[in-house]
Image 1 (spheres, rainbow, N blue to C red):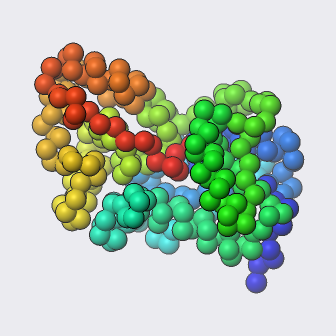
Image 2: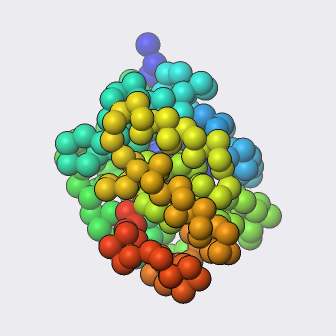
Image 3: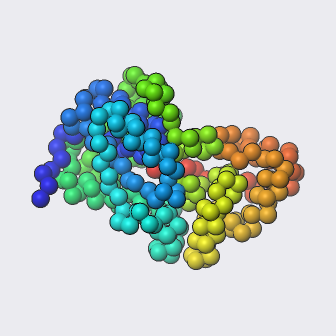
Amino acid sequence: MKPPVRNAHIVCYSGGESSALVAVEVARKYGTESLVLLNHDIHGNSEHSDIKRFKVEVAAFIGVQITYANMAGWEYKDQFDVVVEAGAFKVGNGTALCTNRLKTEPFYAWLKTNDVDRTSTLYYGFDAGEYGRIQRRAMILESMGYETGFPLSAWVRTIQSTVEIGIAPPCTYGVFKHATCTGCLKAGMQHWYVVYCTRPDIWERGLWAEREIGYTIIKGYSLLELAPKFEIMRRAGVPATERLASGKFWKGARRLIGILETEELQFSLPCECAQ
């Protein structure tokens, strides 16, 4: 039987730059003896190899091995396999089944298995501009008996970018806003336009999932019907990027091709797990 985890500093270590900065901040403030970098490894089809490179390099810099709390079968199941098995993309109040299966369930299972209590603190990479997310996360976890911390919001920062410690952020930030799954099932049209242009293999997985489940990833629009519109956008030279704010992106798209109606240009909030 494992000894209980007590008086630990547990960083929810997603593989994105924000969570990496939290790991550095916590290590600098409290040391590494009781530091846990808790990660959920994702199938390589969805989690870019450079995200995996990044989280390993930051962990090595800090001097702490990554602790993995993985979904059973993560090596051969991606987010599309998970939702097709469940027969739905979302349930209840809009909870994404991919996030629940790939991350949330393994996370809570790890906390329970290791008997984590209020003597330990769970740290997240939300910054001061994400007050709503901070409130929701703190309220949920504290109601379950866990303490939370948000260094990028509440602490005096000692680091702004991993470039300062000689580690380049994941290359996915070149086109995506978050270091999360390519083909995010909570993302909207802009994300999926990037997928259409850059990852035809992921696009095909999305089409397959929609056929199998009989519902759409983006509310009101199937990938099948979006494909010809996205192809027109691509040929018109609309850049495949999330780095442009959605309003500016779609304004530019309309200017370039002049065929998209305003009500078609919906964009969902990013996944809760994105850091």
